[in-house]
Length: 139
Image 1: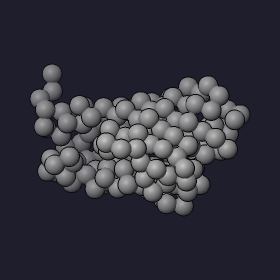
Image 2: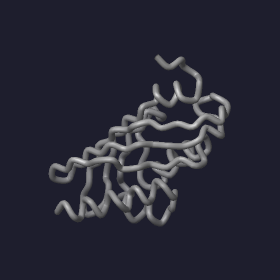
Image 3: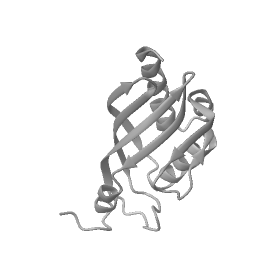
Image 4: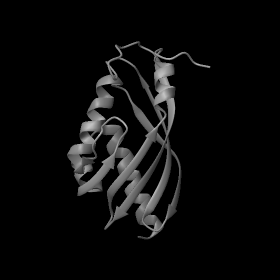
């Protein structure tokens, strides 16, 4: 996939995760996509699987936004570094809303085919989130 196409897919993906738009999800995510998220013990599948993760995040951080900071592309694989920002206004992994603002990094690998995302392995800074919402003391 040419780098311009990869860049276009990633830009549309960021638009999707920041809006939660189901039509965009189906545009950029393959129905057969497999996502490995630390929030789920089993892989999630397709646009609906990704929408499930976004729903969980938006219920805890209704104003959550991701900024794509940098990418490295090799063939159809994209390594991406994001900053995630939001306000903890809902329950997150059993932790009641604190009202705290968060800003953490995530490092994800995306696998693309035919202009769509077919897989993701994500590693958000959950320790940083837990520290910033007041569950774990910060160093």
